[in-house]
Length: 177
Length: 403
Image (cartoon, rainbow over all chains, first blue to last red; front, side):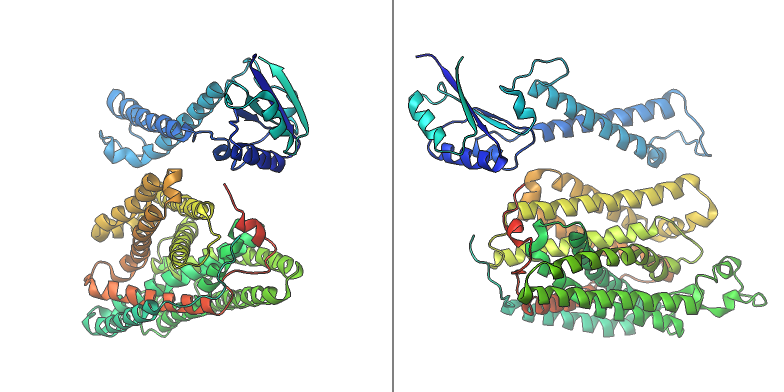
């Protein structure tokens, strides 16, 4: 039996949520959902693991903080000490308040850029990467849920199809893959 | 959805503990007067101002947040709006205490406000102070008192009216009252935007009369707001543990945690901006404020800054911590006390110049007394209305809040 993939389309995020809840309650595993915007509360329903993006971002920002401290020390104190506004002390700590804005900005810069790049890379949506959503309408106003027979070994194709049709489906397409 | 309990019953412990607290406060108030040997009982008056303003600020911050929720049409907080309402029932008392201290200053019973001395404006007097005399147009008695009465009038008026409309909505329903509150909240916010700044100049910044900072109003305002959010969060968690607010979920707690986190960062940002600009430019008329604090209160000043910044930043940064009431309440209590000392440091150096003695029992006793009074008034106000605004148009959305 060839593996089949079901692309279940909904035209409303609430219908998608209700459909996902109903199918998961019947023991179906949802592989993925494609939606034009984040649907709040969907992740735990279809069993998506919590994102670690926040942890990554914290690490990028901490790196930024460390680099900025190192940089301000090297440029302004160690390599070429500067006398700005009568504050010529050759000590990083006594000049620290002046460096806080730089440290802050650089932490935000690193945290934000690192997070965006990581996000695009993990999603496979960096510029030039091929699109992976099954239907271009999911970038407009439709929601597609992807279910495969491979992940639902205990059920036959027709069983799954019957269960899907109990939900408020807008369009259903079944493909080999 | 399970039906939430509408009638709040004050747990028996609260009456007992607030009585004990108020008793301690009264004892500290009387004992403090006799122990305080500063001139004009300056330290005693300063502590009353600190406590009065601190708790008044919590209630005013609650009314600000309440109005903000209406003006921005925020729905998630509809369920807990009675908590904020009960908090701002303290406003008349808070205004009264602050006015009492200022009035005593005007009649020279205390000398917290240096500029109230008429000698300073008199060119022929040996005490003539040119900088203060130049501030005469703003800091003259009639204009000062006009402002004071305007604050009192506007704040008390809105605290009464918001409560009245809210209670009326419970019986009438519909959206007419809701949209009226929406419009009136916007009006109040305009008043609040101006008055929260000028009030902090008048009541707190004018203590250090020679000094001024354009950041000051924001800095006091953010401190006020964060203590409000902490008090609200602590009481909501407490009430949920008592069995009220059964429909309140993790998402509400998360939102409250976000407010505590965000406003703590706002406070730290403003505190540091004010400090850094003054430190950097290093000009005599600006550094007086920090020079005073550096001389006698250096350790306290930096401890307060780091506690109020580092503790909420590192503990509440993660999503899980904001949803965990254990972390939230502990961090809340720490920075609540720390913000009290922030206000302490705004008042004491300019009024006592390091001549006072920190006795612990007086300062903490008075704080406990005022806290007892505030909690008593808060819980009493809670019993006087339905805990859930049953006919609030956003209530349904609030109950399904999910982020």
